Length: 436
Image (cartoon, rainbow, N blue to C red; front, side, top):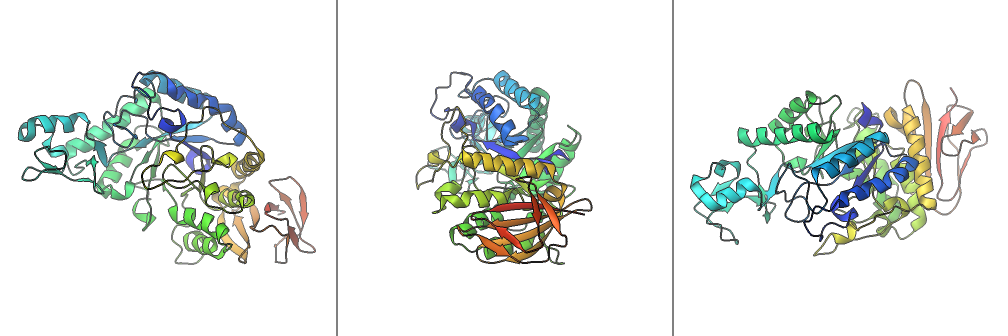
């Protein structure tokens, strides 16, 4: 499956393309994303995930119209051309599917506001005509987590589900997308996920379904009959926190818990989406006091089990933190990408990952763990790679049973001899492909 082998890159188009506060003039701002294609190809990206692109009240997750591109970004034809350009560069495209809730300007909800009980859409939402909201609608409705600008859809209503499935079908037909990321998938009913999987399996070969989940048991979402993957927030926290606190035992524990070879391991053999930041959380460069740790952190991201995903700008060390009132600092306008030493290192990790069966599909086994160093094995029937991560600014000498005499470093191409032990440089990353 293409998605298991992918290196993802996330855009938040309303931010990237400087469209959030733009007029609804249908100017082709979304075509800005095409400027990134040479950068993405050089970086080693094989798939992009676009946060909401359809007409919304403001931030994209408050949908007005599922079938029309947000006029602040352009037209449907502009999106079609952008997807075509990505495909011509060998890059797959996944769109955000916001199916738990809509914005207040969503057409069917506006019909309910106007006609109340007489609206044919009144059962599309979770309403109570004996109550009211702060908006004075003349009825109460269930919002998303207390945010009344987001109106929860009634997914128990078959008509609502069929409408949403038909929208996905139109996205494939008109834009030729390769998958969708399901916003707040942890709130979507199991029957919805199963029906959506059945529908999309017949829609396009290897159509990818990715779910957002913050915690709990990821197995509820991922199965042969539901989603293919989900966001690995547990390891996202472990990644930055382990480096910032200089305690790699935290991420080591999470990796063993999720992918180790013990009988109780939770997700062995599954490909979760691995990331260190996105449009909802602080940039990882803003979370580390020692910026030199970004290299080994990304080295670990691209070698641990999972599908690695970068967030636009973070590959050159962009900073940004949310505050109590806004996420705007996480979603800046950037028309042209940058390239620096960090980007170069990440590119090497990405290309090494893509070329290695072990780093994509291999079993995980911890070999050595200290507060500041982690060595683990990724292994398939055809390849074995030992990964060494050094989180500190001092060299580290490691003595361990490598199970072979020599190896090729997939990052540098250099030959490594295990005979007298292994020296890992300061903030070092090694992907040792062992001789057979």
